[in-house]
Length: 315
Image 1 (tube, one colour):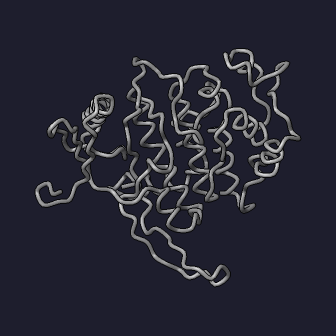
Image 2 (cartoon, helix red, strand yellow):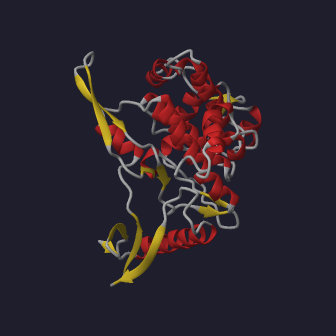
Image 3 (cartoon, helix red, strand yellow):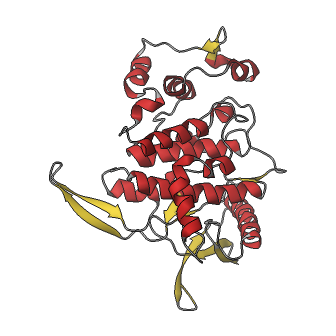
């Protein structure tokens, strides 16, 4: 579809009451974003308009390109380079911090919901692997899908987030707020850096066991407070190391720092940031304002300050 000659994206919602209600909630969030960021500086997808067409809610957006997940999938799950991860991470933190500053939690951050503005790429032939490998030309991204975004004052549903990106306080039903987004971002950045999911599981108990293998024991305060006592025994995760699932977790997960691909300082800076984002206790987890001040981003902050006139590196 065209809007004054330029192409747009149109999201069409089924004429089913529960989907329509979800669409109304999403429109409400998108209108708030537009009101608070009319210049579209904060890297959340821009809604142009919405209308009801024979009972189908329709929302028009700026046209974006492939998601960061689809690009990686089409590229044989080749991970992004460290400098690409850094630029994407910086923009995601800016976008989600803007939501947090406006009393919103996204609750469904994942690589599928981070879209490239343009997914044009250059191709290189990898002689070792005998295959073509793509590298995206411009890592400018936007955060999309506000269908589950929740205002601080609104009802917070018990379970949020797509499984692999779900924070421990959500699994343990301890209540959640903005920090659950930071956990999700940590999982996303790991995936960009390595090309695979940090927590590849579909079961709560196994998910918690993976967390313990990667980040150490779950804090006893969280264990004491959770209603989900069935996952614990005598104040410890009830997990059989020697079952097939136990072997799977042991073989497929390792302490976080052992995933680093290079001993170069910038790689360790990324993992230092990840450790702060993947902190169990939501109140101890890094705030996005602190993430943006992290040494991992210092070269982008310097570029922001030195580029005269154009202050925002991600534009």
